Length: 162
Length: 420
Ligand SMILES: Cc1ncc(COP(=O)(O)O)c(C=O)c1O
Image 1 (cartoon, rainbow over the protein chains, first blue to last red):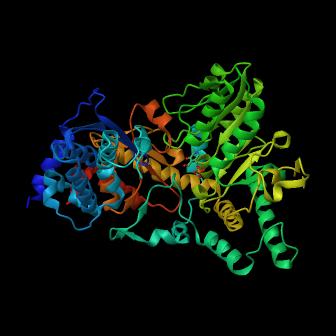
Image 2: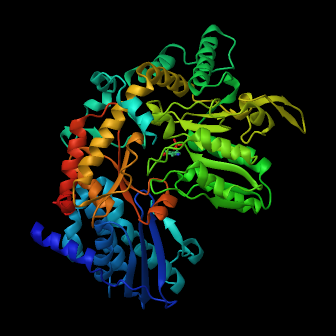
Image 3: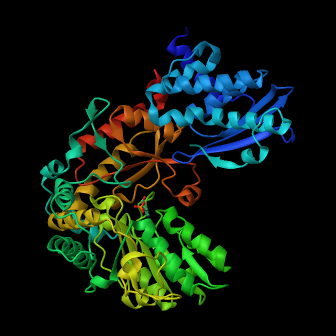
């Protein structure tokens, strides 16, 4: 268990020095841009799958500290995970920030954002990038023919987060 | 803002501080603290008289209007139509039939655009808007111009976000069909001299469409003496209910306009292959109207007229000036509109802190304000920022709430505290 001071440092570090922050032009990346219409958070996440694993995850955007640090932490956490593990981590993160029980340790640094569960109006800020990554992974799987979702239903584009 | 006008406001008798007790929600707690509601430009709290008027309708005479032959339905119809009379008096027109009941300012502005705009704007024509409009008075015109191959012209604003008559003059041409602007803007809180702007528009043969959503709260509109063509507002920002609003239209113009939404009491005769429609305002009031809300809006208008605009203006001006002074004194704060205290709106940012982060700090202190683009991305572009904080004041706020806003602003740099 970490201290709240350490958590603060982790969040600020990711906010000020975002990781995997340069988007790629490579068409193998699946790009999903999501916006939070109420506050203007705007995050683009790129996922490249290779043989069912996340070969790379990139993110870029503008928003508050919770949104941007969350995207950065996620982009590190998902690297090299199998698509299935990545989706599980995303589900776990969503549970953590909505106050449902989950195995937080698997979220590594991203568990610093557990306190978002006390701030219901900010949950969307925290989950925006994760939602984008989830969609990117599903798109990538559909494009590889490894999933049963038709690619057309998950076309790239700007969308509003729900 | 004209200094003589501000002076008149300052010398007017103060409102009784007990107005606060007219609003039940001023008594609630948030995060264990007395709730300081400083998001009044988004919507206002409701006084008991409005709640009671709506409650009485539902409990005692909740019948259809214009559709029942019985006594109780007649009572509902009379109550509804008497609000139209109240609204006409309120707006300064002798013509109740110039008052269209809508779902709010957005609906009213869209109605003008889709009906009148469609009728008069053609290829190569021009529609003038300002870069500080709410999306409701910007996007409909933008899209109309796109459909018609017409030009959307952005009039220049002064440093305080005000559209001056000279600036409007500078963009008018013989192709200008419509000038769409706010009475008061919702981020900068700039107040326009509508009478002067209407004169400029008319000199060039254009009509003026006014978004009164913010303006109606702080200055009583005089649509006839100011010579306004269209004026739209919502009930909910003026201490009335949500879901209801008003569109004033100059009678000759309403007369020419086709309906946009069809069905219900707006119909005259339905033949197999054609239909005739009723006269204005009913032509524009399709479907079952929000009767309780209209009655609530009538009660809200009675309430503000009883208080008087001068007292309300004095209260809001005093609170807003206090907030501007307090925020300007803080080094970590940037205020975007220090000169517009009349409108009750202060837009600002905490340096180096995203407004959404700051908003959680205010929330923890029991203070509600708005963080974001305030439904006006054009204004954010004009200011060159992504988002701002906005505190906005109403007649029931008090100085201690302003002081809590200032105190919380000092702590907004520690925004991660809210997570732990
Ligand atoms: C200037 C302005 N115009 C239009 C609107 C839209 O009002 P409503 O959402 O009630 O239709 C608002 C309120 O948000 C506003 O502030």
